[in-house]
Length: 417
Image (cartoon, rainbow, N blue to C red):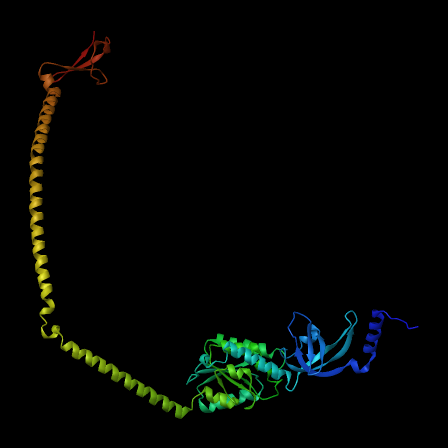
């Protein structure tokens, strides 16, 4: 009699077969990504070809190591293991590595970032700055020990030795290089006395040059207020820094030539250009002034200059007449007011004088009445005691007191009884 198995038992048996099969422990498959929608952590999608479809799972740790942006419909080479998911009865490939089919991951990442930044307009010619014809001071962002800085110094000294070079020692390969390049680009802009910036390094593989493809570097070059010359790798090497820079130089020597003038040829050309521009500017100015002078000479003011001040003379006469009339009017008004005031003040003053005169006369008469000599002449006497005090009453005198009786012509001493 047949023995029936539970679904769980059968699935466990199949899973054990899958796990023990050496051909399924590590598989290499090629297929097209289908149903991909990036999730916050682990990724779930499918791989398919013309004849079959297989579910695919990629854990977050492996997905975050990808050097390109995974997209739906992309053809890829996947490395992983096949597992059976017992609860669902389905199998899937657990992807450990993923590589774009036909081209490298870095090349895919390069194209993806290029498309993104192109859409933002970072490579547009509208944002390109003009290089200065004469640079007094040039900043160079590169390795201090490479051939790049030596070639730049040699070329600038040969072509235009008046130009000063300021080196920003920078790591140009490996971990942290992109951030250091971007930081030094910003530092060069903050320097304040630079006219131009050269960013570059020597040749190498795409991995060696990759820091110049990083978005942080591209944006730092785009935001630079200083014009930037990119000189990265050899002539055949192309980086995103080359696209965003104001000018690209195939070699460090070419970058130094772009940064400086040819001493004799460029200076003579510059002088001739400035001379011609000055001559044309002065010619235009002289012509304009001559036309203005000719127009002014034909004006009424120059042909009949007296008309220039006729109106002013009339105005002066009018103001003079008005001033005279006003002055006379004010004088008459003041005279009238003074007469009225005098008519009021004189009688009052005379009355006051008369009153004061009467008061003086009355005071004089009072003083005459009070004059002691006048009193004694009329037969009166003044009696004083021994202390020379005037006595006014009998009660002030005692028997035996010596008194002085003052008459008009002398003093009599007497004793009181």
